[in-house]
Length: 250
Ligand SMILES: [Fe+2]
Image (cartoon, rainbow, N blue to C red; front, side, top):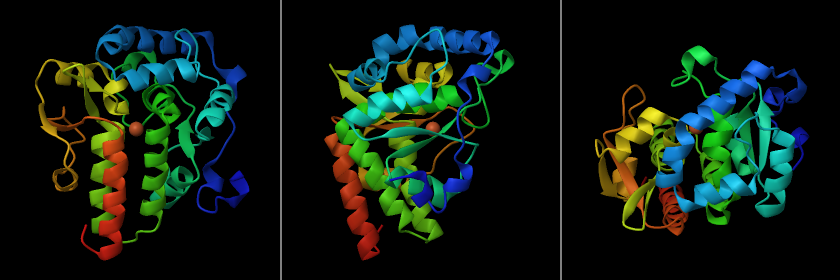
């Protein structure tokens, strides 16, 4: 699908001016990676760490989205598409449904290493994009976008937003008898990840119904998250959610 066919998202799609990044910005990227990579090597899902290699992320310089997309597209057909900022829901869902991940190109400053009110390129690329190289996760995310794009009821969208929150943003998985992180909000935040690893967050078995009925917390550390045993589980949950949407039982 070309960008011209994205009726909602097209106005937000930009190009990444990679040459415009300054040495200071590359240094900030490197600092951000250095802060979290050692703990991620121990506590991130295998699929995330493999994705990191597959898409060719560099630890010492900002990602070039065209180069990352070239690697990703041969693997799963996903593309990391530069956008101008926060997207309205219809544009966001439309892009996911066409296997394009809306990706910001700006980077936080050195003064706000730990927190940004809106996602930046570190959250979007370092946090999200490695998982897009995983075939089941990639299919799950496209299906999520397709289903949400078909929904107009605000209550239904809020519930589907919880599914996104507790998987794509704050997902955890059990591997080797440990809780490992794969959600971008955990991957890209030293504090959020440490909160989970230190055991300050309850970990429930993943249940679609419980996820749909658990409001999200956006301004404090997570108090409960939902562990999957494998990525097939969220793909199947998305299928179940789609059925519930169609039958009006979500
Ligand atoms: Fe995110």
